Length: 128
View 1 (tube, helix red, strand yellow):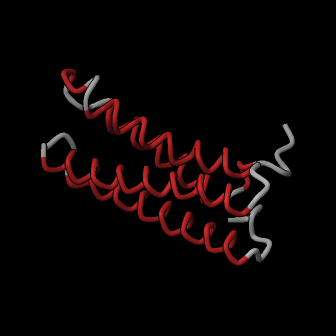
View 2 (cartoon, helix red, strand yellow):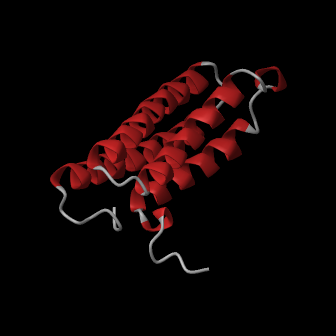
């Protein structure tokens, strides 16, 4: 499949997607009684990050693109909270916490760079 002009080329999306995969891996270990609670919320928020980057990618206007990226940023911060909560509830150990924390930090940094690229209209839309 040719992805030459696809959201899949956006590094921020790639990092968000990698984060989603980590969230799924670690939330499989959460208590069963959290299936419809924190597990579900955490997964939905993580998916929202990459889905909004993907959806915003095809929007034509800068303001539409930024609106979707802002939703992604909100979901990212929601996930940051769930990482802390998961640690504090002892659903994840320090290794999982660090892995999730590092992944969300990387995704956040790249999403912010992508937003700045859109704001500055400097032609980085297919790279970041």
